[in-house]
Image 1 (cartoon, rainbow, N blue to C red):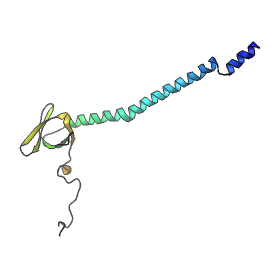
Image 2 (tube, rainbow, N blue to C red):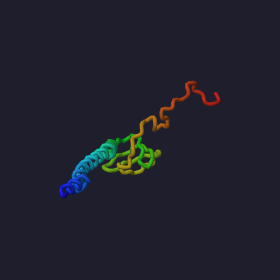
Image 3 (cartoon, one colour):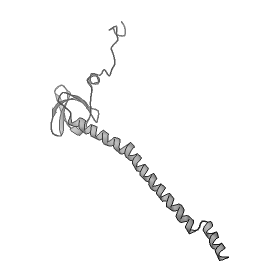
Image 4 (cartoon, rainbow, N blue to C red):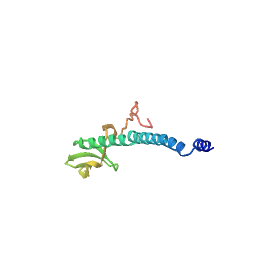
Length: 129
């Protein structure tokens, strides 16, 4: 009778059954946690690091005469380059000093002229011609 009670307790999910099932779930939790960390690295941290690297490289390669746009949206031509600052000419004879980190991007020449790939009409005439 005592042996039957012991077997019944073991088969009902007593302490022995709990230990075996929790050991497997802790390994699967650890694997899921590692996979989650790897996904965050691949889809969030690594692309952000690449964007920061490209931005820093662009800011250090700015040369006099280039058209740039600052992070705040101001367009200007680089008039002078200093250690950690640039002078931007925003209008003829008007220069402003900006930190290199404020340069958002270098503007291609066609965008600086306001063309943005727009071709003039082939007939050369205006709307009334």
